[in-house]
Image (cartoon, rainbow, N blue to C red; front, side, top):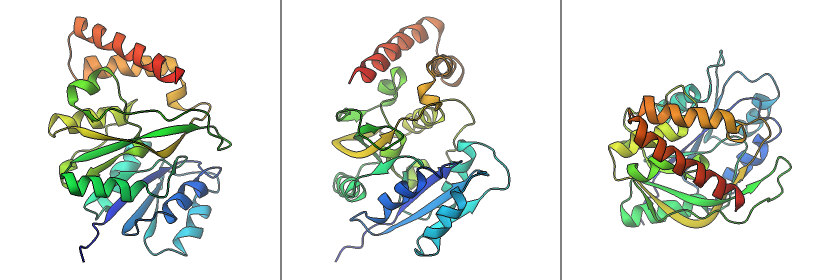
Length: 251
């Protein structure tokens, strides 16, 4: 019988008490069982740690790391990656929810096709957990060049071969997830999409993704400073980003 590869799930938390229980429960019910869950709390001042500790007391494969200082999601994810032991790393934000076959579907696809990274389609939910969109489709594959004009990868939908990540770290910047994929895809084959809604992606008021002005500023900064792209090409890519963002919100 073939041994199922270990998946390390990394969940950064900060004041997530309203949502983290549903997030962790969505891991517990996975039909794929060989996983470890590393929850990194970024100095929450609510009941997040207390809730997570309810799970760590019942499940040996769930670990809580409580940070003494709030340093942001990039730092929390980096610490989680240092603790990861799995062949694969899957990121799950503390307010999103997985369908019960999320891990099994991605593992089967990646093992069969020998893929470095996969992601999947999703549906949006609101703060109360109600579905507020239809399935958001994803492309069959995404390269570095594709990703420059628009980040179509929701972080909680991703799974990546740990050896492909290597010593790559998250940078402290707006749109740190997008920068991470750009940096990864520069040295890998890119990612492959699964057009099945295996994740519920929560839209929260006040989140970075809902702050359009910040998102615009971050996007321009990534193109010009992180990727060192010239002004004219940056303007072209930026216009594609705006169109893609508007189109996505209409779905």
